[in-house]
Image (cartoon, rainbow, N blue to C red; front, side):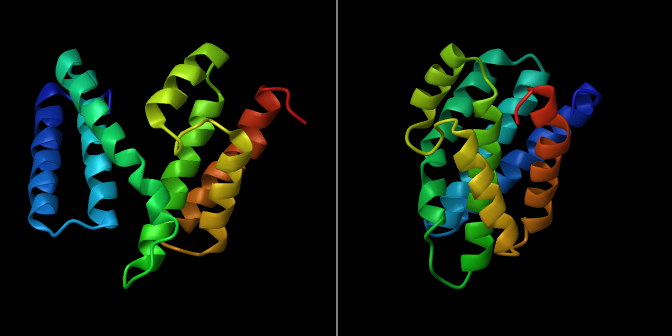
Length: 161
């Protein structure tokens, strides 16, 4: 992302906003809300890469409104059940794993912003990634990859047993 030229970042944002428009045409349901959360998160990251800090901050905060819906996705039942549960487990696991590596003071601030969904528990993060992998959903291979990276590279670097 950081190696993108400014015009490529503009193109990326154009596509992100097109995704938002398409999502808003759908009737509200948990999958739509989860995807909107990701749209605003991605928009915030791209805007930060463009040094548009105020817009970035606004979209990152907007994304937090949708993050709590990820927990609802863990228990979703319906035609898209496998995808919604896989997506929820993966994103919540990944976010919590990253948060668990923050210094304690930053973790407290981030946990308050993320509500009960993002609390930075490393054991919960690894459990969610394991669940995603075991359910063999669309994101199962990525969950396995994140867990392997943690076990092979991150855990030894943190001197954990």
